[in-house]
Structure formats: structure tokens, C-alpha cells
Length: 79
Image (cartoon, rainbow, N blue to C red; front, top):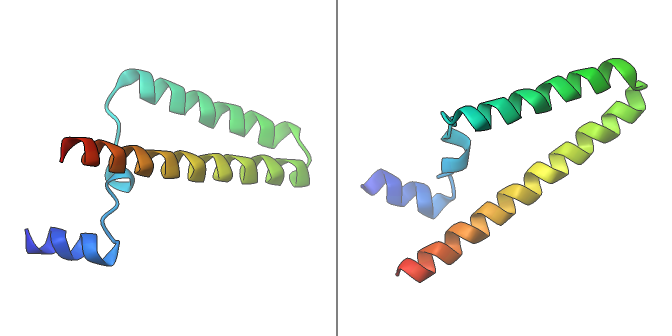
């Protein structure tokens, strides 16, 4: 319990980075994303693909922020 509290205090507890979805639908969607990115990497010039990767990274950061806000809101409601 003390380790969890320390992790919370220091901001090193990131459950979203430890999750490995077991849901087949989630795995299917993730595989489609991987396949699409590989296809784009083959077809687009390197500079254009770099922009796609940057966009994907921004989308990922946005989803992480949304998840964090949802967690905080759910915690407040639960408390």
C-alpha cells in the first residue's frame, strides 16, 4: 500500500501504460491501425508519413488526457 501511495505522490503510477487489452474487438481495431500505418508508410513520402505519425501521437496524447479527466471525474463521483 505504501508503494502505491508513493507512486501516486511522485506521479509514477500510470495504469494506462500497464494495460494490455484482452478484448478481441480492441485487438482487432489495434491491428487495423497497425496495418493501415504500415500501408501508409509504404505509399507516402517520408515527410508526409512523419506528419501522419505526429498526428497519431497528438491523438494518443489527447486520448490520455481525456482518460485522466474521466478517471478524476469518476473518482469524484465515487467519493
